[in-house]
Length: 490
Image (cartoon, rainbow, N blue to C red; front, top):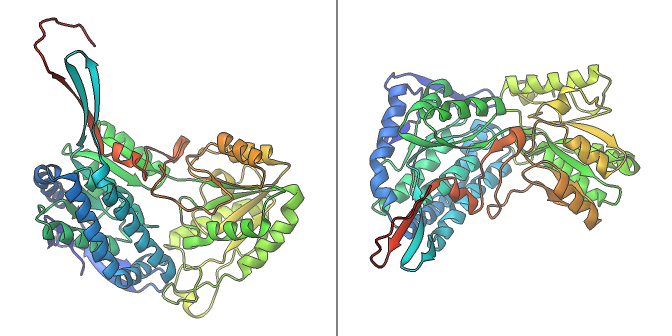
């Protein structure tokens, strides 16, 4: 059985209760984890608070070196960690390997920033200088989702730890195992370097219990959350009571617009990868496809042929390109969204069925699905489709595509395919999204800030900007000579 990580030690829940973690491909129990209580969460928060003073006073360069050492430990266990991730989440093993490496890349990125962290200084007037210091916020809560449990945890841990904060991680209830193991390795690197116990802690259990305690406990000064928009709204409301800082990366319904002058073969590959990677269970997946009329027929023909070649199966089978959905409820919701579109006149070009026989009957599989002639009021266009189903809409030109793309409560990612630089810049400036790719698959870069607009979130992850969201500024005035005047101010 996996256990909590609190103050550098593995512990059981105070209640003695446990929760099973099951493989979405087979239904088999992978492991069990403790079912955390409020008291368990408080123990972790107290441990993080106890470790804060020593960790925050550790030189940034040393904190960065510890993150780099953790990267080496994690890479040594890459195969073990990727296999565990596939078993608990369902994604193909090659995608799990990519996720572990992505996690390491993020920690490496922030570890490498350590020696370049600077304060600001300014001459205020004769005899006075000003400093702007950046101080850690304190104890931070990291609430992590199930679709990319490791890499999205890294988005929070990298900047939080480098900035001198301590962290309590609350993994998703269905995917806690790899998170626990990765945090164990980070903690190992911290203690090997003489760091305090409790810098990083993990408590598993219901969000309504463990997650809620992170939100209401006044010792926690920051919440980093990735998940559904409705849940994010509740996180923001709860955090407001104590004026906690929040970074919320929420839902998306990312549009992809393909113009008449696009490289169709590359765009088709990007649409397939962007929609069906991780069985479509990605915040930044292509979720709405807008095709300019002139190329729509040819594009659709190529896309259908490509999607037909996607091999579905258990993620541990290296031939599998797409695994199962994560839960039965997730599959049911996607099926209902597709059926709603069909009821409103849409046409299924491919998929919309469960594969049958053998291993397929044991897991939550759904064929990759393409749907065209989708009505504007359909759930597939108004909601986030978190699974392997793609609505296709024809538009007259780029301007109409951008208009329809913006007709959404979401604004996370977006992509445009065109060889015309003027069209590319028009799209970049007018699409309402936190991220826009031009002629590129949806790949996130640690060098660039990432965050949504509208109901897709608040705050930034990635980039040097992420450090800003895990620190607070303090102004200092230094008088270098005696002054007697009193100056009025704010």
